[in-house]
Each structure stands twice: as structure tokens, then as C-alpha cells.
Image 1 (cartoon, rainbow, N blue to C red):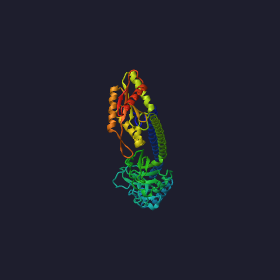
Image 2 (image 1 turned 90 degrees about the vertical axis):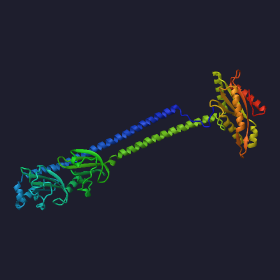
Image 3 (image 1 turned 90 degrees about the horizontal axis):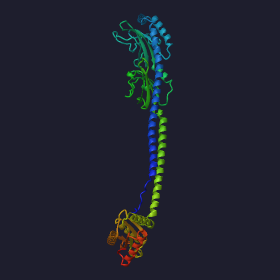
Length: 494
């Protein structure tokens, strides 16, 4: 058994199991944490989506109540006037004044509504709460060709400033008076100025980056909170994930990037019942997820901190094991050559000889000594002597098997225990090693000179009466002494 210069640390099974189990626990915690964060994020989005829809429903119902109330009043006032009166009002000032006073009184019952008036069959105001509108033609949907058939229902629409009778953008609610064939004979129209809708929508408190918008069925922005004066009356480009305004029947939730400011929001959208208007409430996603993001950051910082601590603990454990293995290696290794020291050599030799005796195997011992080593030290110096010793070991190790034992007995003396090898084989190996050292191994001195050296080897084998390592080693030592007396650079078999 040749001891390497650097022993490899072997991690105990118990350490592998403990840290493996801890690693699996951390893996499980990591998977659970990811799943929990994903679930909690989805839950927060779902809750805020539901709140957005709920808020938009409430607002649409509130705004729808104003429209529905206005329609009720329109239907009522149309029962108080005839087509003949509307036709007469355009030329009879008294009729016009009476009808204007009548709608002015009715307007006081409609909070949030800014204008109310009667239209004749030409869709011209013949009476109005604001008498400056009398004689002006309305651009509402009631203004149709004489032969066009209409449905007897309320018409809600957005009128831009360019088409508005008072040159202000408005939301109009109108109802026609129809002939039995469905032809337009006149009607009544109420107007809610967009400025009033804007005032109404800004009465709702919202977060810093949240939004509320009122749009018509074509996606035209009528009012917004916070106010966006430059965008009023313009078409909102609907994201692909947003339900089409015209197809929206009730309510829906979606997440999209706002076309107004580019921020991603969680939207709830509700259509005003029976009216082509929709309320859209948007909660800023980044703000909604702020606490969740802080939780993500804190969770992962804590998780990775524990991982780092685990890694440090494992690294410290491995360092301790490496130090222990290194100390064990140093305790059994000759520091100059890296082979077994005297203590380990004797212990290993005793074990190998005992095994050979037990299993009736052959075994041999080589005792190797460098010839004239003191002269080498005296002539070339101790550093050169150390290199000679190291060169000898480098010649021995490739010659023997991994199952054999090589160690430094002391000074320039080395011992090799050859397992399963008889005297003949041991002698041949020893002589081959001697010849190799003589012919091939040289060392450079400190001044660059080539230093050659030889060895003497004593060989002894396991035999009857000599069944302990100590006895075999003693016989090998006597054979080595004999080799020295025969002139050195010899191999002698005991």
C-alpha cells in the first residue's frame, strides 16, 4: 500500500445524509415558497379585480340612475305636449315661452342635468330651459331623414363640442315622438355637460396611480379621474385583452397597459344598464403588489441567507474533515518522501505478515539502504542528500504494486513489504530495482553537478520459524549488512 503525498478527504456517510436531508428540506421549502408566492399574487390580483368590478358596477348604477331618471322625465314631458304645439312654437312666441318655462321647471327636478328642451320635426329647438338655444338645430341621432323609421326608445350619445348646440361637449338623452308609422314628429332632449360628468367622477377618492373613466360605446373618453382634459372626446385604443366596448354586456375584469399613461393596471369594467356608456376602474398593479413584492424580497433574502449559512456550515465541516484527514496523513507519512513513516510501516508490515500467515500466502521484505549516503551529504550537502532520498522513493514506488507497503525506517533506510511474493520473486524485483537505481537515477546538486548513487538490498521471506514481521525484518537487516560487506550495490537473500 503506497501512501500518496496528499490524502483525499473522504466525507463520512453521516455527514452526507445529514446535509442531504437538510438540502432536501431547503428544496421543499423553496418549492413551497415559490408556490405560496404565486398563489398569494394570484389571490391579490383576483381580490383587486373583484373590487375594481364592484366599484365600476356601483358607479355605473349611480350614473345610470341619473340617465334613467332623465329618461323618465323626458317621457313625462312628452305626454304634456302635442306635435301641433311643437310645430306652433316655432312661430308663436307665447307657446314657445310657455313650453320653455315648463321645461325649465322640470329641469330643477334633475340634479346633474344641465339642459332640457323640445325639438320639432326638423330637430330644431323650439323651447329650452336655456332660451338661447331656441332656433338651433340639434345634431343628435333624432336628426334623421323624413322617411326614416325610428324606434320608440331613449337615445344616449356623446356630442362633441363641434356638434353641440352650445359648443360644449355633452352627453345627451333624447326621446322621439313618432307617428303610427314610426316617423319622427318631434321630441325632447336633455343634456349633461361633460364638465358635470367630470365633476361627478372626481368626487370619488382614488389612489395615486389609480384611474376611473367614463366612455361611450365607441370607446370615446367622456370623463376621467384624475382629469385628462386633453384626452376628453378622444378614442381610447383598447388593449387586445380588454372586452370590446360595444360588445360589453355587463361587467368584466382584465389587466392591461393604460393607453393614457403607459402604466399597467387591474381593470374592472361595467356597462351602464340599458345605456351605451361604460365605467372603467383601474387599480395600479405596481401599487397593488407593493406589499407582495416586499414579501417576495424579504422571503428570498431570508431563504438565501439560510442557504448561505448552510453552505458556510458545510464548507466548515469539509474544512474540518480535510484538516482531520491531513493530520491523519501526517501522522502516518514521512514528510520528505510521502511514504509511510516508521510507525505506520511497522504497523502495516505486522498486519500484512499476519494476513499472509493466516491465509498461508507468501510474503517477503526488502530492506534498502543508500550506499555511502554520509559521503553524499558531506560532499554535496544535505539538500542534495534529501533529493537523493526522494529519487530513491520515486524509483521504488513505480516498481511495486499498490497492495505492497513501502516506508521509511529511518535516515536512508527503506523497507518494502511484498504481499503474495516468495523469495525468488522478491530477489528478482530487488535486483531489478538495484540495477535501475544504478543506471537510471541521478540527482542534480546545488551547483548543477550530476550525482549518481547505488543501493544495497537485503531480502527475507516468510518461512517456518520466522512468522512475524519483526523476525523477517531482522533477517532482511542481516542480509543488508551482508550486502554492504560484499562491496555494496548488491542484493543478498537471507
